[in-house]
Image (cartoon, rainbow, N blue to C red; front, side):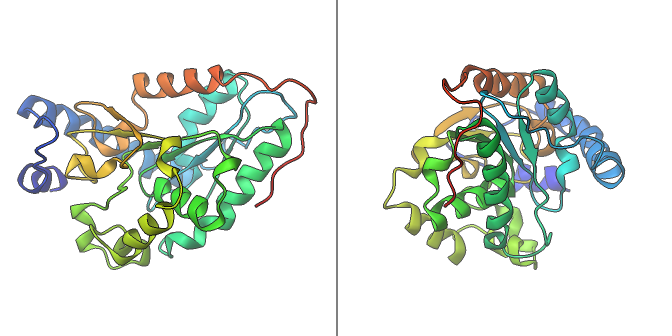
Length: 263
């Protein structure tokens, strides 16, 4: 049904329309990855990978999941980051149907942990609604200096057509032109906030459409053709591209453990 709505209501003049072949392939991949995430990793294996934050000079990562998810969403990423010896923390955004603003303390604490261990601001990787939670935390606490870069994967930065059917607090906030989104943009207007963001978006995103709504004005845009919403976060090329950039962030000279910045 989501893909049917995408075809009818996801027309975006700024993005090349998906072909039927792309849509069918994206649907098939999404069936597999959604079942894996919602039927296995999140309910049964959300604690199989612990946060890994040793004292280190390497740039660390904070992983922020999206709507109706938990930290188990990031299991493949945590395995990959651990193999690369990259410090990381994956959060649980709770309550699951609360206001997006209510997740600020959770994100703040995770950023603090990684900064305390590494002595430098972390990179944040966020999927879907998680990107909005990060934006809200940054804007409302003026915490832009506390992170190096933010990668968002299928985040409804300007809302999504599908959110009109949601009755939850966070779902309503993700509606196109919602009062909450307009206020967030107003808070960000005084800062060059978008320059720290890299936004991945796709013409086959079955949750955030039209596709360009997953981009933030002024941010770097990375168009990934033919990827559905959940699958986008686990596409090998997307994952390796981001991990490579995290590794390139290098190490901070000086003490192994620096003074964390608490906003």
